[in-house]
Length: 479
Image (cartoon, rainbow, N blue to C red; front, side):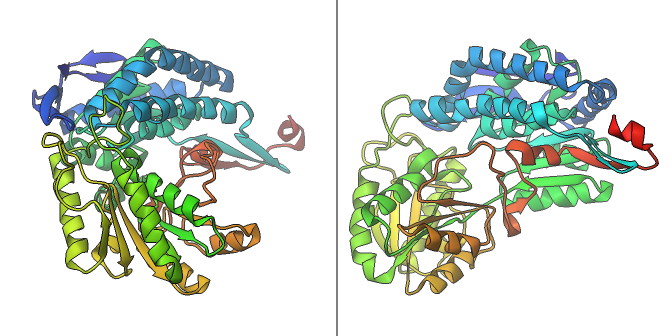
């Protein structure tokens, strides 16, 4: 049983202003696995004040000092990586292999990337007698999700620290354990008091207090588009910068000359990974209409080969994160059936032999039209919709016919052709032929998938203000 009842504020573990606890549920067992305190506006205010005070000195630290700090964080993180992975498995159901190799690994990776960027990043540019300076924006409020908990914390915290900002973090109350360990790591690494602060709580209280607080200079939020809209509304009166990474309904266009077996199989697996709980999952697979029958057979085999079970075992996917999420996914699967899509694999209910835990059958629908609910709404579960197209122009039109624009995928044997298709897709990141992840590639979306970019050097820009200093002499500018 994990009981994390204190907040990390001003370099110390402190009691909440008003005691109020929340049970944390293990989604694989449906049992209570720990408790956290729910923070109030008073707790957030205390954290913001600590961050503002710390900013006075931390914003003036040298590049070398911040590199040293990030290197110490990486060293401490490696000591706790196994603890992080175990916490993620327990709090949100990621299988052990995924928690270790991807979920926990990404935390350290974002810090090593930030170190690499920081070593050569240009914070000043000379233009004649004018200096263009990039300066830390100030206190940053971070509200992070449960689906990739440490990844989303680290990809915000690392560039914020690298640029000299201070932080108030509210991790997801659904999956808060890994965030607590993350705070312990930063404390052990010697982050100066007030530079990093953690307040647990729910979105309606602690999250709203962060996004609306006049002492917070920017807020970075990852989560649903619905919640992102509320964050933006709360932030508007104080005209703070808002960076958002929101929902997605990413198209996966398989061209006629693609290796159909490989492309379809990989597409199914990509949707099922993390139990479908990834905002950039390729949940709409677009295939030539004339290949639909063959694709159905390939997709059915891939889905039925996906093992579901105890995340502490050898299953490929574990449960979805909560009862609320399970019910949402079940309702959308039923919607797909009711609206006439062809159920290829899976369906409603829990997989055989898994009565306890929020498990979902790996589900594939075919002959889906882009007007169906399962093609429009982000399901956030292991559910794939397969749509047919006649021409490439039609495929592009279907792909772009969505309110989202986070990611897209294209497969084919003609690189020039898939590059041309990629250029026409309205998405922040397009992957060709299953390209591997690139930590330096900017990540973020068009349309209601958000604004701003995370990862690599593009992430630094979100935490910097631009100052023009005019009238600097040529000699001083040259120096």
